[in-house]
Amino acid sequence: MGRAVIVQKLKLQSTVRWWAWLIALILGAVLVMGTQHDAVFYHDPILKVTAVQHQKPTKITDNFQNEDWQTQQTLTGHLLNGKYQGRSLTISNTYSASGAMDQRYRVGSQLFVVLHHHAGQLSATVKGYKRDTALVFMLWLVVGLLLLIMRFSGLMAFLSVAANGVLFLLAILLNGSTQGAQVLWIFGSLAVVFAALTLWLVLGRTRQMLITLATTLGGTLCAILVALLVFHVTHEKGMFYESMQYVTQLPRPLFLAETLLGSLGAVMDESTDIISSLYALKRERPELTSMQIFKSGRQIGSTIMGPLINVLFFIFVADTFPMALLYLKNGNSWGYTFSMNMSMGVVQSLISGIGIVLAVPLASYLASRWLPKEVRA
Image (cartoon, rainbow, N blue to C red; front, top):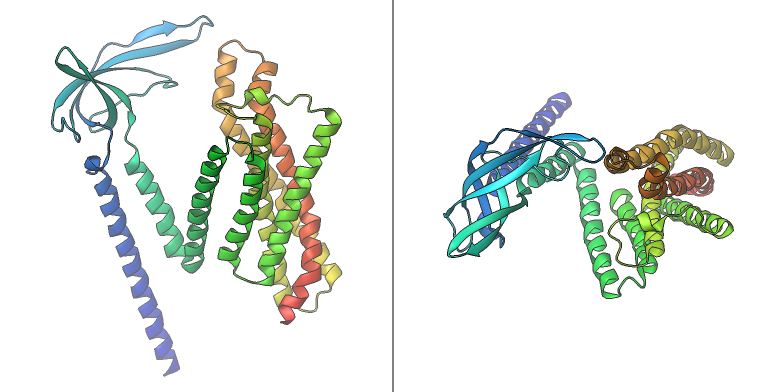
């Protein structure tokens, strides 16, 4: 009788899971299709390309003997919204094979355009792609996989990202209202809120959450203090703040705020892994002493520390690689290219690496002091 009930429950769970997948698939299809017909909700004019004509590509060469191929295309389409909805237009566009500063458009593309009136004639120039379809698809894919695979944990993870996004937007608005005068205090406070909110939503109100939060904030603070000490001793030689792009306020506090948030994410990742592993280990083997827990935490940290630092390095390389190639192709030296594109990123990676290293003994010590109380309770 008991076995039959278990089988019936498993079948019911399987049925519910299949229905959930089906509903998520239908909802995603509706959202993606909806973005193809939502032009009326946009203020900027949108043109749908219905025909494209290409001219013969021409070879171009710059002063540094860089070669590229440039193609002129004529786009024909009709406006999807605004005062001139349904109006047909013909637009010229030039794109290169490298695609460094331009793009090639195809039939079916929806483009944001700027309308011009001259001598009673209506013309337009292209601003760029309407990309909401790809954005909605990726968002649906991420959220759907989180909810269907991770279920409640996935929901909490999504809520934490959404809440942090709202808080980050509010912090940017607050920073703008103060003209950047309090940027470090604003984003320093935001880092604490980020860590507390994220860990609370993911881990809940537990001692494990408090240990992870203390480790995250402690490791991040130590990394920033070490960086400030090194800056003071070296008088910040080799810090090319002028290489920071599009900076409209004092660059040094902004750089420290960026470093603080970047180091916070790396330290939080490592702290969560170490403490979660130690928590599970203690539940499986309650007889472990505090010293054994501390040593286990160091072993776990030494295992994940290397890959995590390499992940930061790969992210940094991926971010600077295109611009570095552009600098080198335009005759700049390796030294100048490194100074203008990579030096600040290397410093940020090193500071985050310091936080990762310091978080290992800190997480191990706090876990060895507090985890036994949590398990016994």
